[in-house]
Length: 87
Image (tube, rainbow, N blue to C red; front, side, top):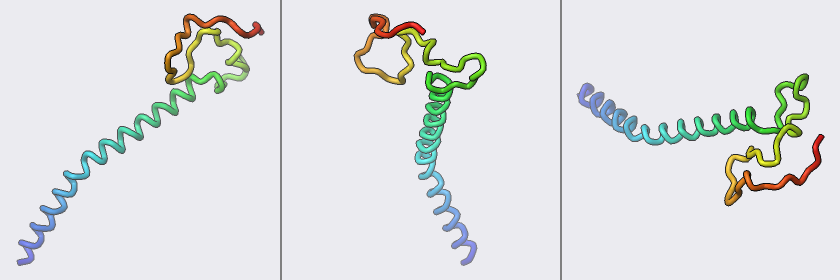
């Protein structure tokens, strides 16, 4: 009697674990994408300066047609005209 109850409990727990697999995959994927986006912001954003001694103002070294935004709708950066002075 107790062995039968134990088998039933194990079967229910096994089924519950199988049902949690898609949830864990999506949570893991979302966490991975958020970490990758934060790493991209830290490494590619011109507002972040990791080396203040050699490059104190990294935003001044950007060209007028450099793309640093993550996603831009209907924008061709190669056709932009220069609208700022040189420093």
